[in-house]
Length: 120
Length: 110
Image (tube, each protein chain N blue to C red):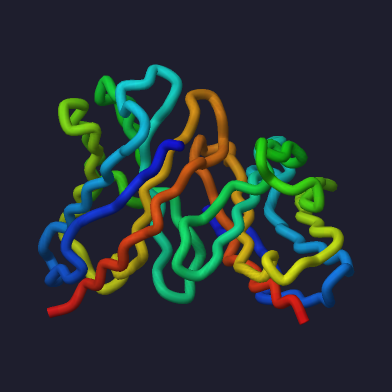
């Protein structure tokens, strides 16, 4: 069964760049049927869709974050990554990596999530 | 895009049925049949329970069912079991080609 696992620093300083990686196991990221994405949940707030990437590199992003976010894919490592620049305390959240089937509107599976705190 | 509205908490006794509501707008829940529901137990990855309003993925108990009326979607859990205790989140595709989520509902099995 395909599994996703997030990794990256748990603490990032304000104005710096948040970088996370999601490793795909028991499945190939080079599937033509799936997209790979990120969702986050700030403490006490609702989940927020960040964006997604196709294995060929095409992306789509939440307009509210588009100016600061990049999602990329590394097929050789079966990984995809999230980069969020110029972070503030408002970017403190649990970040989840997810898979979405092309043409579908649900996310499955999810990673367990990783907490990233933005603080000096 | 505003979040979908869910009750903060619901509770029920074993064997009972509960319903969690998820209210949006004509631009999300009411405008598309693309509502999904996720179960999140502490320390575990969120799990897809319902998609496309009413469809149950393989492996999900038939005690879970989904429905929609207007701008409100609902998740019903029948025959409550202790293992159902978790947070539940709804999500909808939107007319802006994004996805929006609810704030989550904490289910307590008494």
